[in-house]
Length: 260
Image (tube, rainbow, N blue to C red):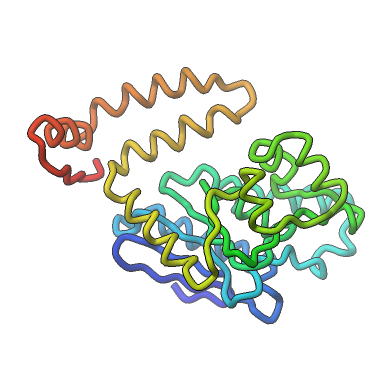
């Protein structure tokens, strides 16, 4: 599929989605959100795509925020609809994606950009990265899951401070806050992400999907994550991946998972 605002490349089981609006510092507009959804939807059904790496083009920004010009004159009802549609179409879709999603944060990840990175399953950052949720400086709050995912990652107190001050943290602070898993030099960012993806791809994709569901369940209101873990654990026993994994272990050989 041809896209206007993103670049999609695949090789060796790794699908890289690059947000490509450098003149706007890769800011998210409605069109880009729709294209990202389509790219993820295609990746979901693509057997060749095992892991997704999400990044931004250029050296300045992952995503510098949402395109404010699109909603500066919205009514309260339109604002509510904007957040609901965006969360359903992209942010929650990424968070619950059945294949691993790694956000490779190069440069600024602000507002909707940080919310998108937080929706990924985990994050790595270049050493020049800066992250923040500056929405209150515009008279609004994060609307794409930021008030929920940031406290889950950094704790309530730090999240309150970051959101209330509208300030940014650098890559090393983000690492200390557990907002990102790793920090690397910018030139090495994508290579590092690919090495992590390669480690992931050595394991059972079916089991990884189950793990994503079980981990996410802990953050869903009214859902007992332990019950979901038990259910997914049992489900694994009926898969070809389990048969292959246990057989390989018992026979002291490398597993070749069929992904079924």
